[in-house]
Length: 429
Length: 155
Image (tube, rainbow over all chains, first blue to last red; front, side):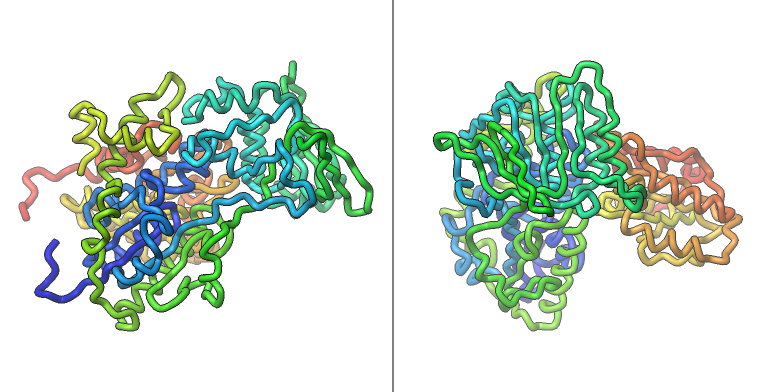
């Protein structure tokens, strides 16, 4: 679209194509249809946690990407994947080229237990495992050994997702895009899972809907510990959901899940460099030792870099510095569902639009066309992503909706492959 | 036909579908899209057909975007007799017990106040294969109230 006369248009770079970045983009283009918006991602594929965080069996939740697709297919927003902030491009360069930069870069690193010996073999972050079963290139080489007994530490939705992923068998994954080979390796010997957290059931952060979902899987025995018969809890849906699990009597259980409340991890048991169990302490100081071959921590996410930019940031409007904004988990910490990020990102976008309209942010930087040739050369566009998408869909096996490519090399190669014409036309340009 | 497309959203999916529905219908009808978040019950129009597009969250609950409208309905003194609507619920059979529960609660409240649903409640399953916007368009263009009038005037 030609701009009217030679009047400059706002040129905006959004770094990160997960929900936070896409919702911000959505609101910006709605308010400023003339703006040039470029969405960058370090991976060749868009959508961040929707693709790699939402569990493979929650395809309905992933459908939010249909909204985001429209941003790119309508032609106004350009996707540049395979462009890594800090490697292919520095933040300062982006700030030079664009009137506004929005950092929606997330927090992908699993928080670690603040314990001695938390670096033992057999200790895994829940985020890493989720990425692994979702086929994330960063985890392509990871082959966790969970053994026969795994302790999952945490009482949030991520912990419940992990438990569900570990107790499901092949048949239970119908309609998903699970990496079957990886999953089989994870659960091969698993017979017992301990789900342990420091919170009491009335403080637990998990969504009871996810707990109820566990009860729909056949062949699992649930045992509940540390949940008092407190009558005031009867109306708490979390209590009800967990209590209902305890009443399930499977005919021939193949796996047992022990659910424990009110236990804080104090140390890991070290057997020649490999974890052998976890020592917990309850609120009365009583010690409980739980044997395990592996430990999975689901205690939050963080990131090692760019956090210094956040000092003094307004968590509502996301402004870090003139023309520099943050959104999503990067801004507010790793809390917040997809819909919560919609609200946050729309608010930040509104702040950006207001500053552009008022002139508080000047307009006139060169934008996307001035990106270095090396960046534009390596960048994967949205149409390229659609080719990858079609190839993954075409490669699906029975009972699976797609088969994801596991490495960046495979993803890039899929762009070049000859895809039959009808699929290419549907993918669009 | 005057059509008010009302949406109750939380992730933006219902809004997205509502806008696609409106775009399709606006070729043949006088269409307006309204977010339930800010909608007053007094804006409901006996001369219009109301297409209610609503998702479901949590424990079969209304989405964040529909809750204010529901609360206004609970405290309104209005009689909604003469208000015609049709419901399209967005749900996910991954959560079967509460499938479109939120949308149904909204429809029930409207009916309780006297509104009339002119068709069976329709739904879309996010875990299915159909595209939600396509399904919604197919549904509403099939409603007899929205059938094309013969020899419509051109642009």
